[in-house]
Image (tube, rainbow, N blue to C red):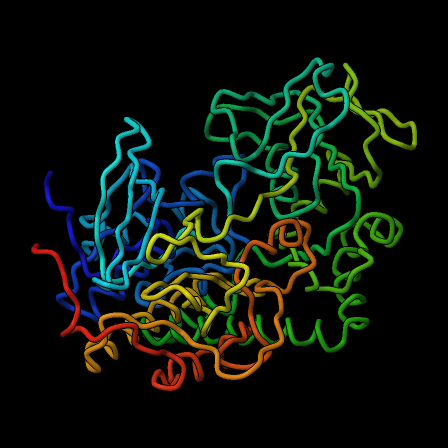
Length: 499
């Protein structure tokens, strides 16, 4: 039997986070051996998987892009294909692409406290063959969505529908919606993107739908945002490139934080601002009926529509928004509880995603599986009870990459500290009592359905996951590691198998 490949660090996931983590590792910890394990046969993660019409970012690209390789496009929200190209180019330019092992799904991860190393079982998703690798540190950058199993509620009578039912996560490449009547079930980021996009032709040759109906049970807060950032363009015209990139990034971070704090502290005023934003496109009557939720802004994520494209489609009459509950599917479409029938040729179930802790990794220690829901997250990165393990969790109220990059840098700091202290393995330890809180503080259905399987956060630092980039920049990267990380074993006493 051959000796498993051993690496200092294993990164799981070759999406936006995994590529960023690898860059930070090779620049801040030169000489560190590492690999990126990617379950799919291509890099890009979300931006390679999702191919539905109009798929785009819901955060501005100047902050969703990497700080070390600023976004150079001109649109505020970029389309999925452009983001995928950006990730691919970044990986190639930095040499990170040479470290990716594709078709490598992690199906087992056990930490041995005797040798202070991980044994990771990897399955080839094409052949089904399994192999093992060992590593000193395991870093999950696979996000927290279940990419294989979306949230798909059962609809009575679905088998009787004469048309086609499609889920955005598995969009058929040959689907032609030209001249078709389409119903999109949902009101989240995917739905508000699909509705205007299906009313336009696309690069695959599909023409415009005849009409699109967005069917929602309850409204979602949606805000029109500029298609192009005029202030960013101005800064680029008067400042050197590097300085302009920093200024634009700082401007957008400040705007995001100010907006979030305003919504949290003055919810009634925020409701008026967001409602007014919509009413200028479609009038107050439709705004009140279909775009005024009962919850406060940012209790769930606010959806962004560039240039108000969704609202313009509604104003033209090309799209209709219906707020009602589904009774059942029927051959010609959907019958609502009100008795209304919506005719459809295609039904798109944009009903959301499922959460999956750490991309499905179920860590064990000395052969005993760790019950993640009993553990706490330290500085938004490491987990109590699991040595030499970190996870990448982005912001829910700002660009994912902002928090992800802080976590990458924190992991590098921990590795440097371990080396300096001669620690082979460390684990976070809670000192005192903590009041447990959900890891993600959002009222969204996709969060509430699955958050119970995740580790918890506490009510004070470093166990609190705050949604504030400035505070995280100060506290997370300046954390006193000696206070809350404890050694599992001394490096000099670890018995490692021969390489």
